[in-house]
Length: 128
Length: 424
Image 1: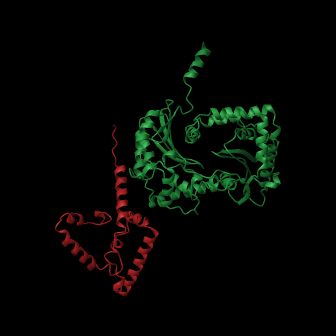
Image 2: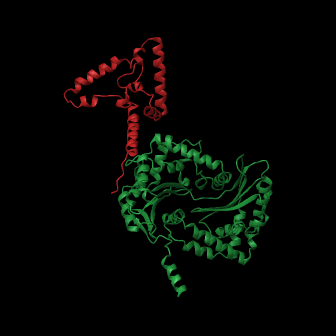
Image 3: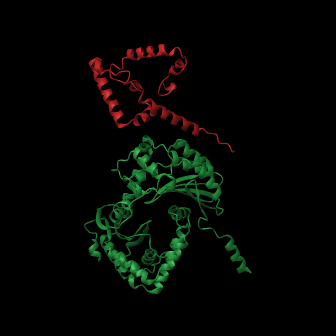
């Protein structure tokens, strides 16, 4: 995971570049996301990001208070369901529309900042 | 021969101590003076002091947001790039103005003017920068001020004296709930063409005008910010504090443009000796105990002035003695001797002239004049000081005493004197 950055490896941008393939890919992706089972536990995809790393921790700190509250509520609910060995009732499942990448923009921003810092740290200055 | 040569040399090295011209570049006032200094400095002086804020603490947050990320470069990029050029970026806030300053080597002006103008035109004001960088600095600064009794007394005295406008707090306290949106809103209201003066030292007028024209062209030209004209109220408050010396601030306010008489009065009463380790000739200095100190404070603003004494001492008794001496001296200034008045005028003139000696004083004192559209030199101030005669002087001091004083005691409130105990 660390090798590929905080968001993990993804072939999506490459696969998306095949035009005719897109529709097929989309239906398959939705089927796969539902099969993964996190939505049935009341979680969103970004809740599954590994958070024990400095960049993701910083990104989580940048969520609005409301987003932070909702995130911890989903965790609490999911861990309770885990204890019960049960999925949530179907009406409480996270739907495809609710499963938005709320954390990804913040993570991407933090990664961009870290990369910029690396560039400045290893800069070779030459006189014009 | 020798005398003639030395006077010629003196004339040759005489520096220009004013902005020669004020150009109106794309609606922004630009003034620059080049005395051949090895470094240049550019200041964006904005009418964005705490006086114009719509919520307490917003101006302070805006000041600390300076040089954070903009559409052009990130906060880190700004710092690192400025370091590579060897420049210094700073921002300072007063009750009326926000000054964004860049000091740099000659030749780097295009980069540093771009840094300043990109903050003014397209700063991002992100929420995470507010919580990660800006809020901790604001909190540290206001904590520092609240642990200094004299600064705290003057801050509180402004609130008592002017209530709103000039009286609104300069520093944000932890109780002010500042959001990035509030800062953004305030910034968009104050960063407009009529509200900014660009002042340069060590840089030619044409170069600066050209750079400003290019970078500030897209700035909105909305109307100037306004604030209700100041009126003076006065009052008394006592703050329990266990840090620092026992402190009393006794202030007197006057509205209208700052009067030359008050500058002369401050110079006359100031017990600060001109020679180190001496007592000074002020009427106060003989009667203050050695463990106490009295400082005159003169704070001129565009439409009001706060004049007063900061009295500090080890014990409340010392403070009472020293403060009574200061009040007694203030009451007696009506019968000032002509030679004392002459001395005070000379002292006030020196203080006014030497305040523009440094780069910061030069930009802030003359910059305020540029922004207000008045002539950007000290000639008016100095000739007004020359015109002060004993009649005008005693009239000014008696009107000052007629109004209700502003009295702030910080320290042991049980022992510190009340205003009426000092003969006010």
